[in-house]
Image 1: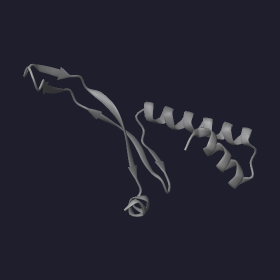
Image 2: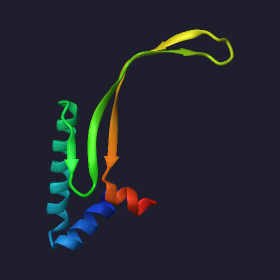
Image 3: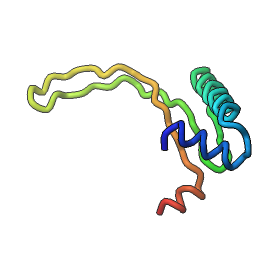
Length: 90
């Protein structure tokens, strides 16, 4: 689902205008993004948890040349769905 379709569906189900719904979605995304950048996790009731996980640097071997290289540390966005969603997807 694209953002445009999400805005339309939320506007229909809430009775809000599309413009107001778009503003609300934009503000929500900004707040969630800033919380994740600050190192906080975000719990969305009925949907799941978003958090940032730090992956340490590691060594990697090239499969053909067997040359060892270092893969730098990085941060990774992690989403863990609620148990209810996990059950629905089974």
